Image 1 (tube, each protein chain N blue to C red):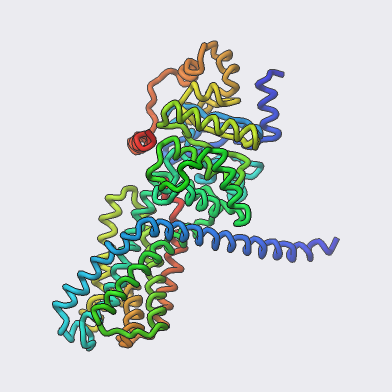
Image 2: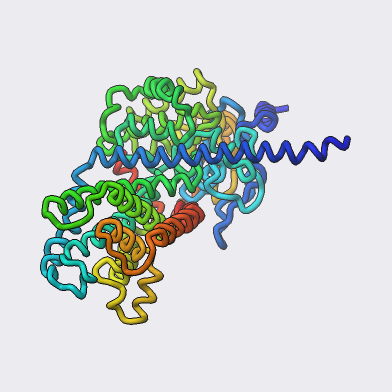
Length: 278
Length: 276
């Protein structure tokens, strides 16, 4: 009789470990399935990447060229366009990510979301898969932008490891902002309202970051906001990897902030997702 | 013991679906008011009722999308609240709205739902082939979802729901917005599925003729309650009515429907237009 209480916890431990492994497997399969679907959609509509790349190129070649010789804005970098490149890369990805929530509202309206929520895939898997979809688009857009930068002979580091690191940070940041977008999408009922809220979120995030200018030239209160803005860390990390310049923060801190932001946003989005069907 | 009582007893004993005193409340609105019913394995069970009667809400509880306020519900012998994952693994669900991804081809939609419903990679191709055959999809597998006709979309949706070999298939208005030929094709395929795989089907519909022809038993809902339950013949007898439409009118009080929000009506019309 005494064996029963002793064996029960071991059994339940095995069982919970088994359940954990199964859950992790479902999470992986679900995330991969969602990401696969996004890749297929991109394959069917690959022109989307090029049309979306127009906006960052305008920033780079009109705004950047106009201020090319401005050394205050470029934080000491010789060519402002080089300073601006990581910023517009992150900005373009931010736009992709934030307006990804529109897709969630659309999927809710047409019934795909209800259908997905009634499958065994964990909600976190749906969220991560969607975030991966946004990240894939941002990655493709980032590669196009790098190609244009190379053609325009804008001076950046072409070290493959640095490039990979920069793209990784871009992918993580885009995934995190896509999760934030899904949280917003679960809180609003219509696409029209989401558009308004999306603009309200994107613009402050963009302008109160180091995307266009160094944080050091901002007034004190705005510096506080910029330091609390995850986009600043994403841009800072990409800039350090692509240009070798740092505004003071460490690269590991940039990665850590972006990864933590992704983790928190993904968990929060998985929690708010069920509300999306009501 | 009457035939109806015997069926109910069998349904309660074996029950592919069992609902007891189910209540769903949204704030002050009670969408489902303590309903109870059971569905036998292999049965086609219809939920009928005007807009706002609580049919879709009931299905959402049974598919684990909504938590009931009170009462309990079981699907494939699993509690929908405590064993949600087991329920989701045992069911196929085709919601009222179009759940196919228009940006993917028909084959990619099948592949996608095969993946998210946990069909093992080694079995996926065979299951997809079976579903394609069962729903006669082979002529439009490479077409994008957004280019398919209403009948094709519904058949594809049902095919995606069959990949995991569900014990219970939930179909929320599967023939809404379809022309009579497309409706017939969908039901012919479901009939075959039921005969060959013995799948239990719980369906909501507004089409009385369809319900009479296809469902073994029906529950008519009105204002969140079940007002009549039984086989079509039993219901006609019980209400001394010549047709199921007359049964429906008598059971729901013959009042004009007041349920369904502006959003529901707009969504339904949009879907009908899309499927037409």
